[in-house]
Image 1 (cartoon, rainbow, N blue to C red):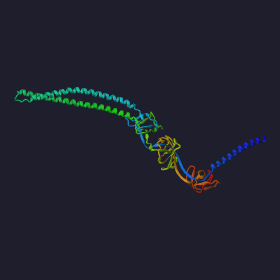
Image 2: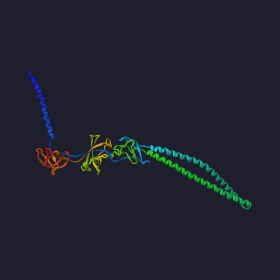
Image 3: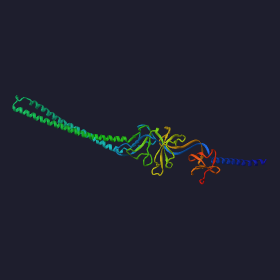
Image 4: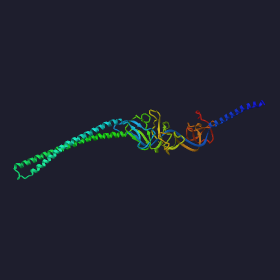
Length: 403
C-alpha cells in the first residue's frame, strides 16, 4: 500500500519529462525544415517598394492676385483638407495698407465733390448776370434795328444818321455781350471738365482700392477640398502671417478624378523600374485595401529629397486604374509595390544557395558540391531556375569563400 504513492510520485515527473522531450524534439524538426533550402515550383514575383503620396494632377489654383502693391501677407487661411463649396472663403490677405489708403482717397473724392458743387453755384450766378446782359444788348439791338429801318425821306438827315449810329453801337455792344457770354460758358465748361476729371480720378482710385480689398479675399472656384501649398523656403504648409507675392501659389482645389500617386525612387535604384510597369498601391490609412495602377512617368533628373539634402531621388508618377473618391484624398501617404517581373508555375531557388558573382551562375547542393545553373529573373530573395536543378532538390547555403 505504501509503494503505490511512491510509484505515482515517480511517474508524474517522468511523464512531464517525456512531454518536454517530445516537444523539444518536435520543435527541432520543424525548425530544421524551415531552414532547409530546396528548389520549389510556384509563382515568382520581383517587386520594388516605394513610398509616396496621393496628388491631384489637375486642380483650381488659388494664387495671390495682381495688386497695387507687389506683396502682402496672409491674414486668414482655411484648414488644410477642409471641404468648401464654390464661392466660400479660402484665403484672406492683409488689407490694412489698402484700407488706410482708401480713407485718404475717399476724402479726396469728397473734396472734389464739394468744390464742384460750390463752383456750379458760382457759375450759375455769374452766368445769369452775363445772360441778362446779353439779352439786354439783344433787345437794344433789335430796337435800334427797327428805328434804323425807318426810310430816310421820312426823317431828317441828322436823325437818320443818329439812328444808324445807334444801330452800329448796339450791334457792337451785342456782339461784345455775346462774346463775353460765350467765353464765360467756355471757361465754365473747361473748369467743369477739369473738376470732373479730378473727381473721376478720385473715384477710379477708390474703385481700384475697393477691388483690391475685395480681391484680397480669395474664394473657392469650385466645390472640393482645400489643399494648402508648401512654403517654397520653409518646408511646411503656408500659414497666417507669411509674406506672399503676386502670383504666389497659396492653395489648390484639386479634381479628385485626377488623383495619382507620386513616389520617390532613390538615385541608387536608377533603371530598376520603367514606364508601364504594373503597381499595387496601398494607402497607409486603409492598409486592408489595395488599388491597381501603373508607372506613367519617371523624371529624367534626380532632385534633392529635402532642402540642402545629399539624398536625391527620381519623381515617379503612378496612375490609378480606379479612384475611390470616398477614401482617397490628396496628401495621403501610400505604399507602392511595383512589379518588375512575374511568372507562374516556374522553378524557384533561394538566393542564399546561389552564387551570381562569376561568369556562370552556380548553385550549392546540400551535399556541398557546387553546380552550374541557368537562371532567369531574380529578386532579392530568389531566382527563376531554367536549367541545372530539379524540383524538390535540396540545396545548401553558399558561403563567401565558395567558388
